[in-house]
Image (cartoon, rainbow, N blue to C red; front, side, top):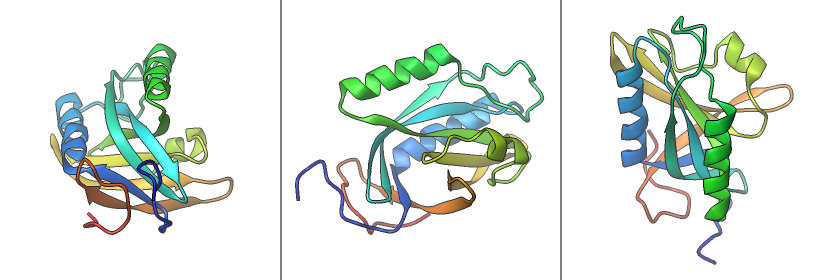
Length: 160
């Protein structure tokens, strides 16, 4: 198997413990507002492998703790950096302050199809459950989160 390929697995998001810690910390710092950011990496046969977590400011003007927005400039910067490394934007993350780690109606209406959405629930300023979702044309499917080491390229490490 070449170093850039992944074995065929069930749909899943492979992400390191350090990267999950970045997401949790960002969610706690931005509480009670939603945090947001970009997931960079590679996709192959239903497996998304995150190689970088890019924190972005929440540019939502609503500031209700119920919305997030990544600026076009921040998103373009993440896309260009990813492509320079031969990778892609493979998903996004955001928090749900005092909510659940499930897609909201707003998430369902605004999500881009075919990418991963990592959602972290934050209760009273402390990050809790993290779940990942992939939106299709007519469905929203939860994908397994697989915690991996930095050099991991395949299936089968510990799920969270």
